[in-house]
Image 1 (cartoon, rainbow, N blue to C red):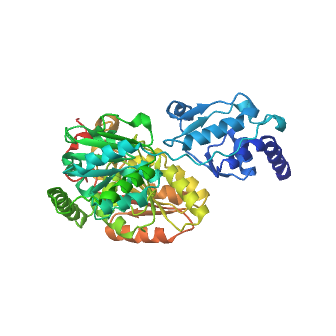
Image 2: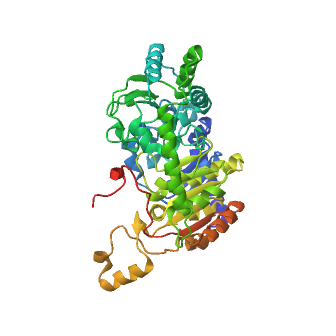
Image 3: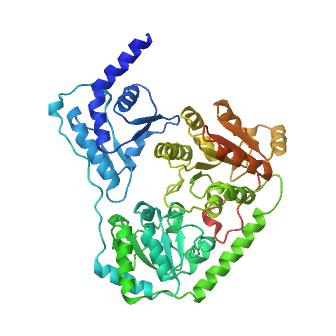
Length: 513
């Protein structure tokens, strides 16, 4: 077909489907991410014609499987029902605890027609309603908190979603309370805040007698609130937007159901009346500060080693010195994500994305693309930095082509230890190859030594850097952060035997094999 016919075909398809994509604009949907193929090609074209920004991805997942894990799933029975179903999907995704929704539009509807007069006009849903906790529950919670000898606030991603940073800062500083952020609660209050006890995480969880959960769940990330990571007699004050979450894994001493920001303001109102403040000279604060100092000394010793190949702590030490304080950090991997959480600080709320509650690998590059798309269109001037383990990068590494295609200036740092948790060096790999078939000789956790992930980025027109030394790391990262025209990838080769510092409780992070 000639170019004129192709253009005409695009217009014809879009005119047929345009009306139900324009509904998405009513619901403030600005971006669509997808993988084209019949009939999704027509879907993407119609979305673009209606004014929605379409980003074509490379890594296809089993989308149908997400139906089981969505807050809402539906298949419109007819074209005229699509608007109503989409409105309910958008509303359900935002109301209560936010979550994914699934709308399945059958293929025969994509190019079908409907009389517009039959389509019910559905307005955009209002912002989610803000609910507050019962006043009696607030009183009970404060009685428990004031009676604590070793209190601890745990700030979760629910607090970030609820935009509770202002009220929480007032509570933490006004009451003198220590706090611990969950992985995606980092930055709600800055990680370098004097009341942040993340550097003494294990000690804080183990010895606290009252824990205030602020939009955080007692799942595996918080060890289900159970011994040996928690005191068996710990009391929990649970603040959550989701009623079904109350009492999961542990019965709370006080349950505060509602919007985190609104509830923290309720607590502040009561605290201001009697002027209560947790003393700064307690044994609890002394214990936490001593443990933080000891852990900082241990981490610093590892970070300041001047070895080649580098270890994890050396790499993160130099990265942390160069990253802008307002950058969005995306991270996934095993040791890479775990150590990165402790060494790469977040200073602003909603500026960290990682593998999340289910530890799902392969989401990092997609998160980075979405974040970079929004940052560019909102012209924030903030960098998006994606820190990946080499195994995690492999799940969706072809998305570097997507970044190059749309000229998204994402900085990817692959911390490459030749394996999953640990690998082997090139010499050992060659020796194993001489011992027999690698499928029977090579440990299952090993990957190809010194794989050239940087050349993958170069192949698509981005900037790839092979990094072996501290000097090369700093130089490559500075160059990448100064380049706003294209994405970059730093392939940082580290010691394959590099590991985390000794853990007090390794049972959740170490294989029994």
